[in-house]
Each structure stands twice: as structure tokens, then as C-alpha cells.
Amino acid sequence: MPLREKLGLDSKASLTDFIAPNTFPEGVRDSFRESYSMLFVRLLNDSSGWSPEQSNDLFRLNLQALLNRNDFQALDLKDSQTHPLEKVAKILRDLKFWHERNNKKDAALDAELELLKIFHQRFTNGNDREAIQQKLVNLLAGPAEKTSWYSMGAATLAEFWMNDGSPGSPAKARTIAKKGEEAFPESLGAKYCRDLIKRIEAPHFELQAMSLDGPNRRSLGLDYKNISKIHFFGFKYDFKKFLEDNQDYSHYPGQRELRPALEIKADPPVDRRFAYNQRL
Image (tube, rainbow, N blue to C red; front, side, top):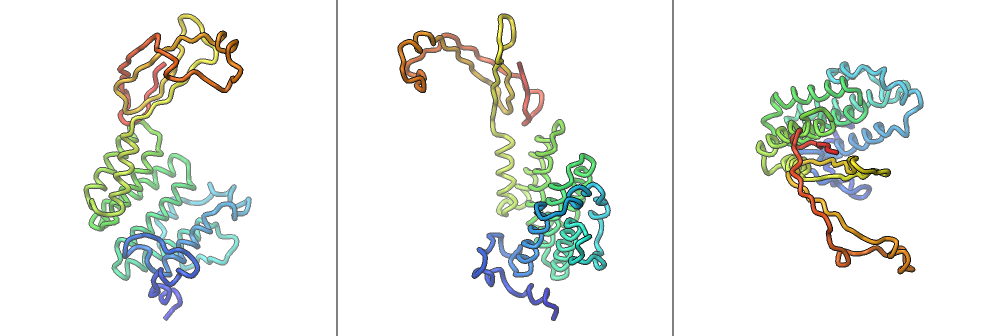
């Protein structure tokens, strides 16, 4: 029996003398072979170990070919001239096909998702990321939709959309995450989807002020999301008197010492749902 097949028979518990086992559910990353493969992939994906040529020539890699390539027999993992990402693709596709032969559909999908996440991390061009996202969309529309790890795939796709930055991307990410949560509510992927939904729906705002201000000029800039009302309070305070009377300049007047002299209530309009809007 080949060594790789033997490693596939040993559980991740056999590594406890050396590393802490992962917490993935049963059926996913639960063998020595998977743990070894993922550690090897992590090492190869660490760009601090890449040569300057490998870092600079990333754009020369044919992403489309890597996304669709299944035969890596001719690729030598020992060849220093082979780009680390090509080696990553060989290891994870080999792992995926091994899982498919053993009818481990969740684990096979997990291996492919790991590869797409690495590609998404490394290829930052808009067209490249669009190709990666489309690959994942096609993957989830196939047989993967019937496996419990589908929810993790939906969470991954939603995460891609959250980082997309295009108009409507947060709302699209929420829709995808919602579908992933509802597909297999008790799965690990569903928990991840719920977390993403909370992050997308969470209210948040950032307030900026002018360093130089003047009469009849807008003084504040507001970036906000998921907020329908906001209150501004203005406080009147004699700083000259404060400086004259205080020796401890690290002390600032507290809430009990101040009373608002001005209150403004605003209902900021929402131009983009779940995304940041800006008003000055």
C-alpha cells in the first residue's frame, strides 16, 4: 500500500504528541493525511519563503488553467522552479480526488474550498477574483448543494462578496449566507453564515471633524451603515478657565460636569443597504 494511503488510515489523534488536533467535525480533516497535506499547503502558501522571482511573477501564472486543471501528475513537488501555488493546487486537488474516491463528499468540498480561498487571497486583480467567485458559484450549484459542507461553501462565497467592494455586495453576501444557514442549520458552516449575517447587519458609524473650520462650512463627516437615527450633542465649555484652574492637564471634564447646550437629531438616508453611506 502506498504511503499516502497508509497516512489516510491514521486518524488525526495520532498526531497529538506533536500538534493539537483540529476541531473540525467528523469526516472533515480527520486523518493524518489531511493534517499533513494542510500543514504542507500552509507552508507553501507562506510568501516569506518564496523567492523574489516567485513573488514578482505571480501575475504570470495562468489562474484560469489552475482553476480547471485536474491532472498534476507531471508536476514535481521537489522542483524549485515550480511556483508554490502550483504545488498547493496539486496537493489540494490530489486530496479532493482521494476523498471523492472514498465517497467523502464533505471533505472533498473542503479541499476545493481551501484551494479557492488561497487563490482569492493571492490573486487580487478584479477579473481574477471574479473568475474565482464564479468557480465557487458553479461548484455550489452542482452536487455539493446536497452535502452538509455546502453551508461552509456558501459562507466562503459570502465572505468573498463582503470583500468585493462593489455596489450591492454586502446585500448579496447576506443573501448567500442566509441560504447557507438555512440549508444545514446545525452545521459548522451554518454557524459561520450566522456570524457573517450579524456582521453585515451590525450598525456602525464613524465621525470625522474638520481640522480647520469656519462659519457656513460643513463641519462633520459621517460614514454609517444600518443606522436610521443619530443624535448629535454640543457642549459648551470654558477651556481657558479649565487651563487656568487645572494643574493636571490629563484630566478632562466628565459627563457629570457637562450639560449639552445643543442637540441635533438626524434621520440619515440609506443609499446602499448594509453598506457604508456617507454624509457631510
